[in-house]
Length: 187
Image (cartoon, rainbow, N blue to C red; front, side, top):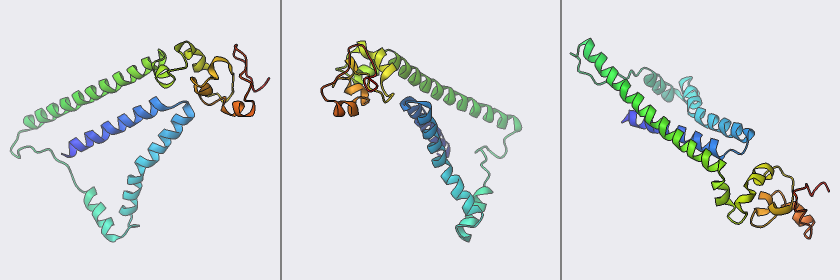
């Protein structure tokens, strides 16, 4: 049972990392999210060490010492020969490698699927169904840069250039920019 929990923990960590990478808009957001994950994952280690040094009471210090002294030994018959122990360990490592390769293959296939869907505009079409797939390349270039370029992207269907044109539209409600994308905020 402990091995299943350890496997589940590792799988959840890998899945969380994949989700964080896929959702990141830029490298700064990615670094921030991974720093937050690292801090959260280290909290239990810090608390364990505080308990081991006795900062959280003598009872917890003794319990951490007891836990540090536990040796995990595989459940093998005590009369087993060295050859049988070696065979057991080889089988166990083969299972671990197989599970690792299976999980790695699953994560890579999910990652490849996400990248392909991002590159061919599927996610854009899902998020902006009324913007038009012909605006996908323009959106990749201009969405999220905090400048309003107007034109075909400054529409309700394109969510006013994904929010870049909201302030401009409030300040100048009758101006929609030019048909050829020009930074309307600087003109």
